[in-house]
Length: 80
Image 1 (cartoon, rainbow, N blue to C red):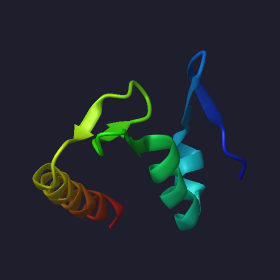
Image 2: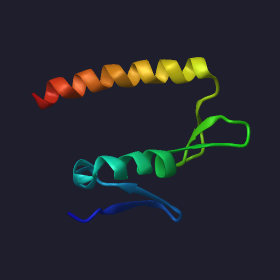
Image 3: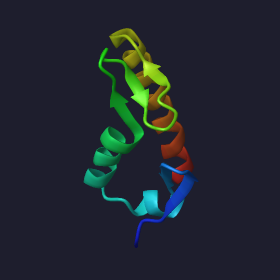
C-alpha cells in the first residue's frame, strides 16, 4: 500500500492512519527518528512539527518511555 502524506502546512506533512498501519517496522523506526523527533544543538528531544521540546533530561525520557509502555499495553488490549 502506498503511503499517503497529509499536508499540514506549506512545509509540513503527516502520515495517514492506513499508511502507518502498513508501514514496515524499519520504516517506522526511520520515521520516528527523522520525521517525528530530532535533537537540537543542546541535545533536547524535539518534535519535528512545531519544533517544541519533548524531553530535556534523561529523567524526562524515562518518564516518556514509561508513558509509552502504558500506551503499548492499552493498544495491545484493543488489538485482542
